[in-house]
Amino acid sequence: MAILVLGMEDGQEISVPYTFEEDPEADLAAQMALKLFKQDIVYAAIEPMPLCKDFDLLTLKEVERQMVKAALERCSWCQKDAAALLGLSARQIHSKIDKYKLNPPVKVGWRKVR
Image (cartoon, rainbow, N blue to C red; front, top):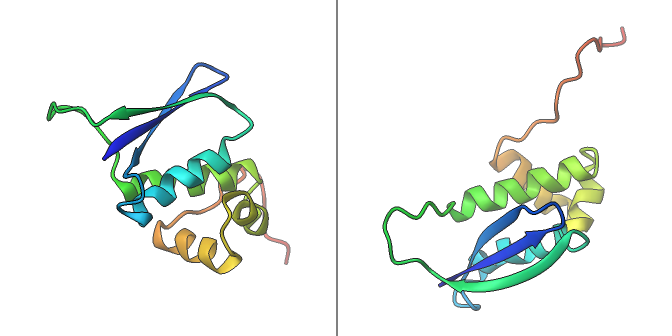
């Protein structure tokens, strides 16, 4: 197992676990990150997994949750567009939204129309 490090235009780095196709589900998070940020990536590097126990690596579920949330935010919470951005079907993204209990932001001052 290794870490895929993506360097962004704004100087931020995103680290995603990568298993070299040993675990297809784990590599799905790396694929989602590459699809989601492909326009903003300046460099990508694969680094070995650190041996120290203090290294804080996000779990696979948390990485996937962040990728889905970032795609939804980029597409103004349009599920169809976010699914296309990540290479998922509408059904898959809907199940991930339910799985991770993601909700669109509430706009202040909005009322329901009666």
